[in-house]
Image (cartoon, rainbow, N blue to C red; front, side, top):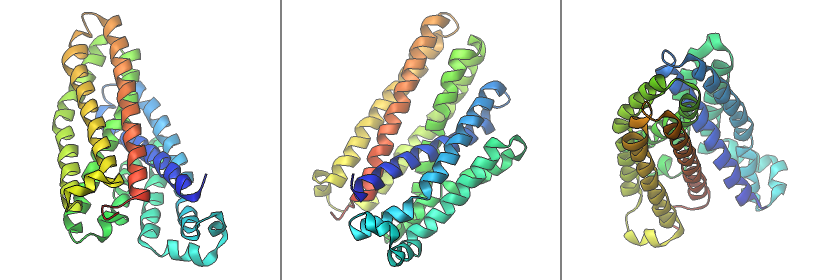
Length: 284
């Protein structure tokens, strides 16, 4: 595996850990009064994700130096490491490490939960400090759109595992109430992630021919997966959740499978995002 492939793998795993940790903190903030025991499990999962994210984030700058060198000799090149550290990626990495550290402390130490919410706010801003968004002439528009995109996406992914546990372990009435509340919130949030995504694509792409190149093809792939996610979310809200109280066994099984499918699809989007942001640009 060359440095480029290693950087894509590192970024994909880092995004998954970041989304899981931020999403867990947001889920706990919203649902701890309804499903305290589930939030306790979400807290531990999010804390472990934040710790893994810290380890992965520490690899970012060395891998950037390796990519500059074209091989892994760059890992030990002090000059290239300094270049990476003083680039926009260095600032982004520092902010990300700070956010993930606060998330880990807040989620793993129950009395410091407020630190997790501060960490989540810091961590979701980190991706906007590097990459295409940070150098684009319309960055004043792109930065808030990217932060909104990451925040809503993190809440969506981070809520899925606690929701699955809620469906599996809680009484049908409690699970139905939590799902109904999540669905109402998602009805407002999901259009935000779509509008933010389309807004960024509109600003970054100035020629439709980009859609025939790797950058554009990856964007189209993300759009197809997003459409599949919307279909699953609609199926959960309008078909499975309403019958949870009447036919709990069948509905629980269907909901759990659907939620796992959503999680895997979002993970696939994150892999595509890591590939797109690491290897390609709209100008390629």
